[in-house]
Length: 178
Image (cartoon, rainbow, N blue to C red):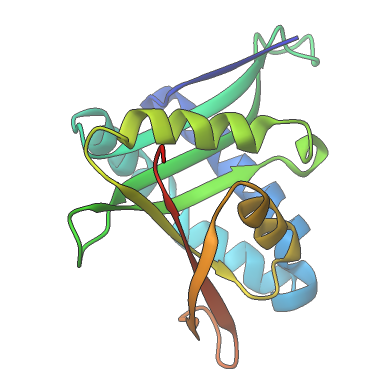
């Protein structure tokens, strides 16, 4: 099995949407409830919005939308299996910082190196234009927090989440290629 990390195309939209749904349910059903997770995924990962995000990132040097896939697929009905995706854009308040807007991996692929491969791909793509990578993760997402901390991210703050009343998110940051 070979894991390929590449720039996303609009042909990847449905796979990205489904990876988001699976990952969000695994990470947040206990925190938000399955109905809220479905609503959030349908809003934040709407097919048209994903197509726009992928198209916009593909035309910019300061943004990236990557997918990870296994080839050959473990399901013979498909040529490849999509394992995860990552999306980064400039941080609006500081042009030296990239914002990791999304990094999700199918739950059955957690702890198999896909998230690391996606993160390394983003770091490589973004290192010429940014000196730091920043992200926000729900404080209740222990899997995400453990992943980011083990990859050298430091918590730089905590703030209320816009997702739901009473939820907090941690802001993490990492220097690119120290």
